[in-house]
Figure (cartoon, rainbow, N blue to C red):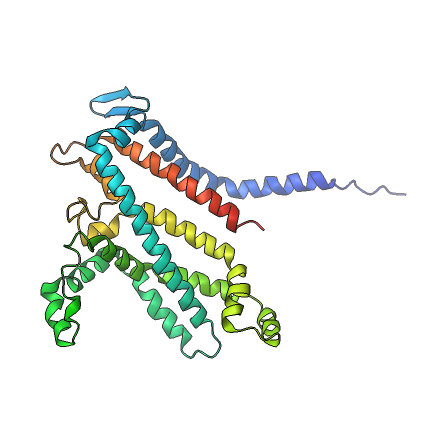
Length: 310
């Protein structure tokens, strides 16, 4: 009898399949290593030095971090920017994401007509450039431009310098950012809700469950992984926020540093140089970036474990 060729064992087959997949993943991994991992590692290394490429580097150890947290020149601005960034993030979590899931629930109702049109209207601001958004809202929030119109329609109470008042500037900037980006969490929630089988809703309806009970006990638990991912994206994006404040105010966090975020502080220290010296300090800027990286890790890793695991 002719012998049959030996087939590879299960372990060998798995290893061969993994080797094939690694062959296709290698270019992406190389790209990620060169443009993500290496700059991150080099930034962490730079945070331990002072000086610049032109004047030479001097090893400072943890001196940059000590100055960032304790030295009067940096600490006041850093802790102020950190608090503003955290408030900026909270406004997005409460306003943007809560409205996003509300809009998603409404848009996925079968009785709703024109759902596609409403989805388009909600998503249109996402397609605008941030500088365009900032310019438009800068005009709308300026009492000189919008004041006469608001008074004519009986909304004179809204006529005030929203971006020029320390008490309202940061909140106004955060709400403008929420308006622009609310389309992304809305569409993600819509996709997650539409992926839930109708069998669950039919069974709940037979049991006499209300719409609120269906949302809290069926829809919300089943979209937890998507909600967790949206929360992570909101956290990361807002702790790196820069462009909207730059478009609405300036990199100095006007008025009076009331809109100063970690992103604008990093730009002033590490790239442009702070007033009045105007000389960049790449080492201190890298320290700001390194602290932000560790803060993001402290927020992202537990959220992943809580929302992405069963």
